Structure formats: C-alpha cells, structure tokens
Image 1: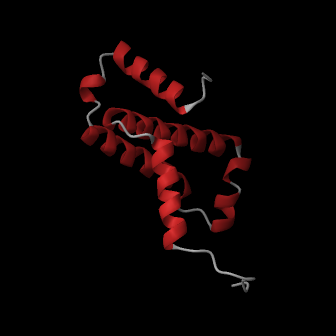
Image 2: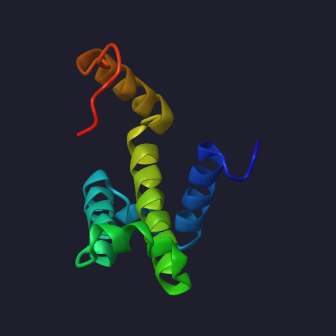
Image 3: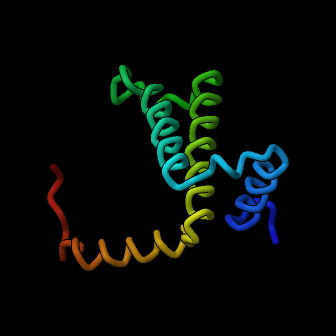
Length: 114
C-alpha cells in the first residue's frame, strides 16, 4: 500500500493521534469544527487578493508554503472526520459527482463564450 493513499494517510493520522492520546478529542463535532477553522485559514490567505493575484499565489514561495500547509490541515481533518464516521471519502465524492452529472447535464453542442 502506498504511503500517500487515503487509507495509508488515515492510518498515519490515527497513529499520530493515538501516540498523543488525542482520540478522546476526535469526535465528529470537534473534527467538523476544526475542519471549518482550517478551511477559514485557507480562505484568509486569499481574502483581499484580486482574482489575478489569487491565480498567482503559488508563484511566491512564502504564500505557496502557507497554502500547502492549510490544504494539508483541511485534508487531515477531513480524513480524520471520515475515519471516525466510517465514510469512504473517495466513494462519497464519486457518488456526489454521479448525482451532479445527472442533476446538471452538460449542454449539447458548442457553447457560446460568456
């Protein structure tokens, strides 16, 4: 199993928490709140940037580092949340895409530019 697959990362996160006796705090409510906080920290990086500046955020090493760290935090809490509730994150995403494809069918034929 690859170190960077979802199950492997969830296992590493669980082992990290267990080694520090943090599982007691990893309730669905707490993990959902932590996920929201970390997502807000990601938003904060982009808060006052223009659309053009936001598209170039990864060009600056300091900004890129901050973005990667916040993405990692968001993903870590999401994976821990899914682990606690027994959700297969990739299956949930695939099912959601399927529903959205049915709900929002692609237009047939060429589209006009906005």
